[in-house]
Image 1 (tube, rainbow, N blue to C red):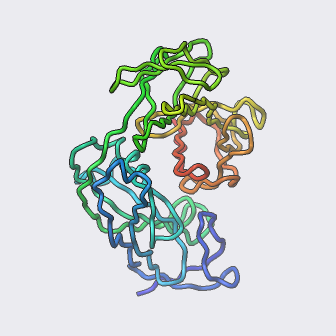
Image 2: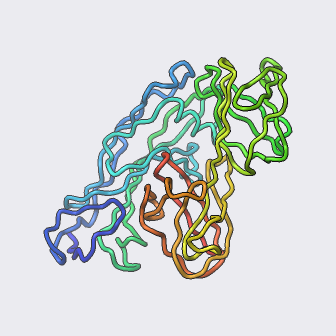
Length: 336
């Protein structure tokens, strides 16, 4: 059996159908063939292989006509029904998902312990939009969703060397993904409160100024309050602290299209940015450091650099942003 579908508008979710004109008839299978996760790489992860590339291989959804869908490679604790899924990668193709050992290790450490074997479920989820109308099944607000069978694998993660921030006001650290003396991380800093760094493995403390790191040096200061990317090299004894603030801007926000943006807060455990804010009827986008060099828009499950504004109606919202790669992401916009 096949279902007749009239394509009246191409949904902007990365979906392109081979239709020559509006209103062309296509047929959709009553039971579209779901995507599959064909193979999973060896997931015994080791720090000395941190730059190696792992590849997950899948097959696309088949709705009965040529179409492109959005695909999401997800992981979850075995038997958890993906109630708290980790998004590893998203793409507009299903055949190959590549991720480095260090990146995957960092993602999974948010949910699974280091230096022991964990049973992890993996799946490939696809969303399919066939009409740009409002609310009906298959539209941008109610897309068709197809999910592969679950593949379960044993995963062994490695713990990361860390430097603890002392006197920063909250318990936080930066980590070395490759264990090579180079540490990075997002940290929240107060311009009025200098901080030092501690290596808990060697009991060494570091301070410094002007980008130069010193053993037992004075506290490190920054110019701005808020989140920064802190990079430290204990081999060459240098550091940098670059402001990294994500905010909301747009006609729906309290400041409209003017700065300052509505600043979001970061959760290092989930790797997400969030804010609770009152909005009016209008549009929003995400920006970094109150500037347009980096801005995300588009659709909730497909944010891209320079993408379209996101429409919202008036109300109090909790908004959460997940940055997948530097210029792509997903978000949830929930009215309270």
